[in-house]
View 1 (cartoon, rainbow, N blue to C red):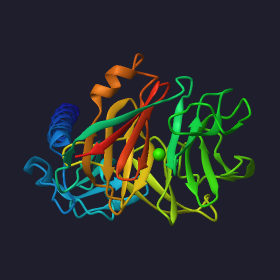
View 2 (cartoon, rainbow, N blue to C red):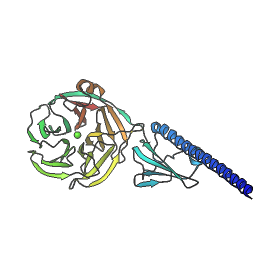
View 3 (cartoon, protein in one colour):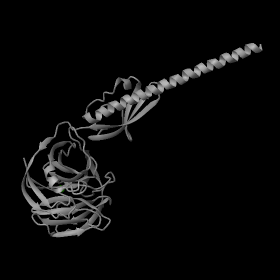
View 4 (cartoon, rainbow, N blue to C red):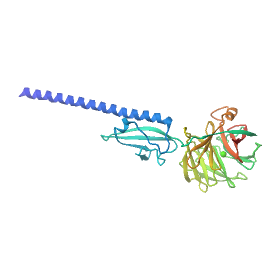
Length: 354
Ligand SMILES: [Ca+2]
């Protein structure tokens, strides 16, 4: 009797060991399988980062992923889609930080972060120009906003302790009027709206409104929270148009610039952009500097697609001694000609667009 029970005990112990081994083995297999799925997804997404997608494209995920999934969802913070289509309801032009949620057939969920790039449908035109005239520019001005009306330049000068709004006659550098900001203010983009000038601050979360004639400060306004910072500013005759150093451009109500009407994200046909800086609206398009890049983008204000691109490398070479500081930044229009300058540049260039 005793012998029999010992035998039974041994038998049961062996059975448990075998079961444990099978269980451990299947856990390893399953873990390896999960790793394979995630590695395959990562390889696919990494490859697609350079190729990019266009709106309407389908994400053709590898079989290794789809065959092992009951469902796949892509989440964008609080939004989620499970159609695997690059739908503009969820995706924006440029980079999209997303998380893939793969529900396996056993109910387990695997997650992986990825960046999905969406590019503009059509290739941008290579825009060319010819320098037709040069004007002096005060090389002490750290240009953050730049526009022309008649023959008068309205300019924002940045940096803490040196920020101001000023106006001067094109061809001269002595200000006709100027208003300085408190030490803690870093002035950014500015634009003309009727008989007023609007100006953003970089991180002070507010903007200023001045009388255009005297540059006397009239009022302040908060800019919308969705804008992390204040960078460029322009006006299309209806809305203020602002950049905040991201890939986004925001349309704000003039009567209450704390209210955003809509926004666009910007991208080219093969390239994403961010750090959009000084802006100028001209005849149906937004022209934008890109921080620390010697280029100017021509952007469709309806959908954010870059339709054309100027290369100002030659002018930047002449004027940029420190690539982190004295960079191309300043776009204005003089009739059909464009005026361009930069931070601390000694010149303003008038160019005809070819
Ligand atoms: Ca401008």
